[in-house]
Image (tube, rainbow, N blue to C red; front, side, top):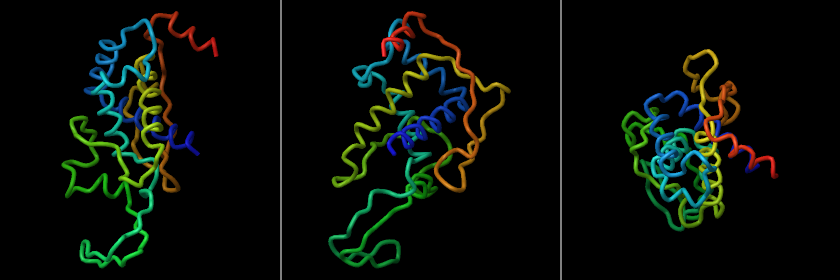
Length: 191
């Protein structure tokens, strides 16, 4: 199941990035500055890739991999938004509803890399969130760093979600042209 979530997150992030001609060059510039063009992005590069991480977090905000948060149980009764939540109630929140709420976010459907936020589900959230998000950011960074991406017809990509799941309504189809030293890609043949 992790593969489905990871591939979905990467597809949404790449779709957002290809649609953002003002953001893509900034991401590529940071990758070239930190990593260079003679090797692949490594996990050890992430602390220096602040813009890449900010872009990824914003893509995760706009396109969460799951419809609801990890379930929480209320430890005591509480009133919230005009509703009373009984002690012991299981509480699920719509992630896309929270992450796109106009009362919280200015222009909530727009990719804004300058948002300052953490990826967290709270103290009792998913234990693998850090590992999963790190893997996704490294893979995303490698895709962006390793290739120049364009849409074949030159148009922007439709950001419509599927009605059945959290996937894009239409698959992302883009052309990837290698942009690094050819020897870098030979590393993949070792596996």
